[in-house]
Length: 298
Image (cartoon, rainbow, N blue to C red; front, side):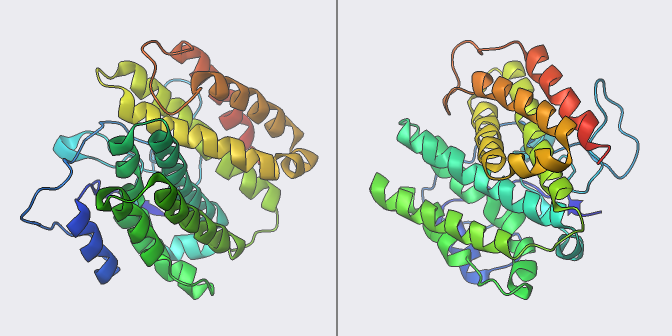
């Protein structure tokens, strides 16, 4: 399979720094001092497993290999990070690009949370993708001629704990996003790149819809809502870059995606979870359904 299950990485600043130095693997580090408390937000950002039959109501899981519900602490579903099979990512542009866009979603959500005054929540988002996505994806990125950007990731993750100003944090996150752009420019290619980009968009839409469902079910919905906001915002940005070209080849999918993005914009007006969600969960899930149905035929 393309994506393997791994536990969520929510270590403190010292652990992040050690991870940056090591540049590989997952590790548990006793830093011995005070550090930010690990928060298990109890929700997946990932699609259902696609290696077997999936029992669920509504549309079937998207059949490409950016999949697998990871588990967080105590067996609870984790927040969207996953191990990457480098061989699969090296050959499948959907896996490769989706992994990078999942990373992007965390940095977008974290920066917007920071700007909204949720500094702790924003800071956590900057560390999540490092061990769970990037350390596995890095060999593929480097093999494709892109410089490692572990240092940029580490600098962004530690900045909120180093007393950096909001402007400095934003600059470090921007450096990460620029590195993601460079990595995406070197993505493996397929005969129908419009279909590839449609599948990436469908993945982001489904993640956002599922996170909304999890947020509605949680007593403390902030984490799930912020994750979902990141996916919704990233989906919108991806659509701004690619949906016109997708529509030229796959008009039915593009129509469904536009409708879903409109619903997600209403569902996620900002990074902070409101006291009352803007839309019924059923409406958000229903908007996702035709996206998954149409993308399955591409």
